[in-house]
Length: 142
Image 1 (cartoon, rainbow, N blue to C red):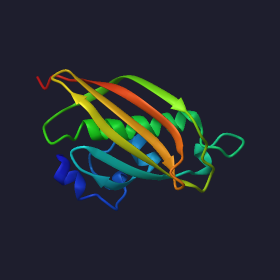
Image 2 (image 1 turned 180 degrees about the vertical axis):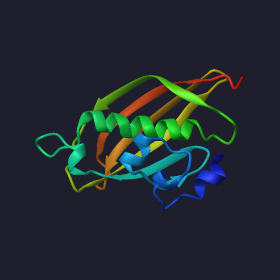
Image 3 (image 1 turned 135 degrees about the horizontal axis):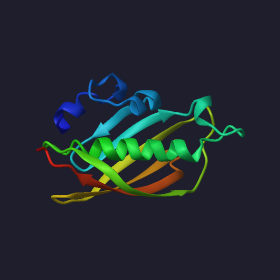
């Protein structure tokens, strides 16, 4: 699936795309926007995503970032298959059950073997909930 095919899902849940994995289906990201430089998805914070205080759990923030960064890195317009090899996340703010948050992903650099990405999670007030970066390893198609 290339960017234009992914773009057809703008305004829809990515879990409806045939190529999505079980984590994506569970997270239920809604694609807001995508082009060659940026991808933005919206998530609703559900009770099963929260800690006992009702705050979006750090592991779910990591999953949201990893999922969107990975989807975007794997859809740059050519036939790429890449897996995350490292990730760095700063947990800055908080989001509560019932709130919606957006993950904004960018490709920092795409080489033959490695793809570097960055992203952030923001709430509707544009406050940063988390930010991170990941490195993905491009697999051989052989």
